[in-house]
Amino acid sequence: MTLLAGRRTGTVDHGGSLERARALFPGAPEPFVDLSTGINPNSYPLFELPATALSRLPEPGRARDLAAVAATAYGATSAANVVPAPGTQILLPRIASLVRPGRAFVLGPTYQEHARAAAIAGHHVAETRTFEELFEAELAVVVNPNNPDGRVVLRSDLLELAARLRSRGGLLVVDEAFMDVGPQAQSLAGDVEQGGIVVLRSFGKFYGLAGIRLGFALAHPDIAARLEEELGPWSVAVPSLEYGIKALSDTDWQREMRTTLAHAAHRLDQTFARAGVIVTGGTSLFRHVDIPDAAGLFKALGREGILVRSFADRPTQLRCGLPGHEVEWRRLDVALGDWAQDRQPVGEGAVS
Image 1 (cartoon, helix red, strand yellow):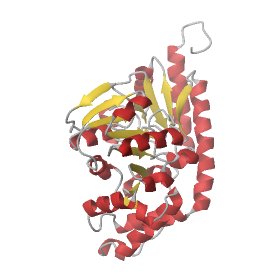
Image 2 (cartoon, helix red, strand yellow):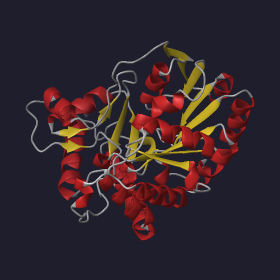
Image 3 (cartoon, helix red, strand yellow):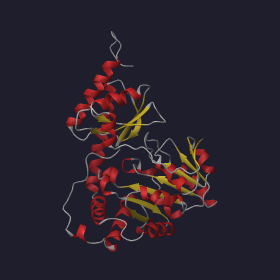
Image 4 (tube, one colour):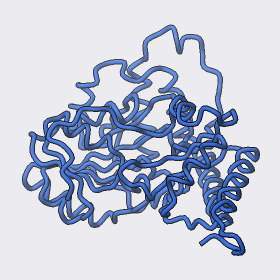
């Protein structure tokens, strides 16, 4: 177990910053191919909104409509279990504050904002690589499927953990930001009525509309009401409400997109394999690799205007999202091939 902080409030480095990419690789060709996030490059189709979407405050009834649609889409019991929010990020410290400050254990390595939010809430935070250690926490956090390696924890194990925590007033937080492309049978969305569980769902990743800033907490109605009260009125903007209602109701688009993403993820695995790199995990929205020369590959791609996600505390690992169109696929393929060729010893025919 790794102690992270008693009170950790500094910023955390994330993917998706083209400003950072240009600072790191000032001579790289433009436009950058940003593969540093797990956001779907095939976004939900844009549609026209009425002028009142920007000139009027959100109607409470539309927020209730969104909660109902989200409950159906995610498998919660009812709209009373659903708290719409302007992204899940704003919910993290509020959820961590649902239990008195104590031991907060995060199953890692994973998305670092959970540890930061727990520290802001006053918890003594540690990252564990062992699921069993979570049973000793007051606040346990599991990202499922995990970011960045795609690890999946079984629903049965999570329910056992939740029962243990609930028996002593603790809380299990399961971040299902990538469960739209994960094994649906392992989701805890339908179990939050038991209490002691908060499930987070992200809208922007699967639907490719990160700028909408929309996310959801799924919880027992008592917890949901408390979170709703803390967020206050008008927490979700009108455009976000309308896009959420439409996209979450569009089951045909969802079904077709899951197939499209699965094919793209397979293609990305093959693209890496041609350069001698074996993908070690991920989801159909991002792939994870673990190689000794990860730093060299990151730099080689960056010099070609291709940004992937590196990790300062895991220097052999990279995460790569999906290219959005054929020009981006070609640029990645060529850059990987050039990197592989540069590493190839004279007289040898393959990259090991």
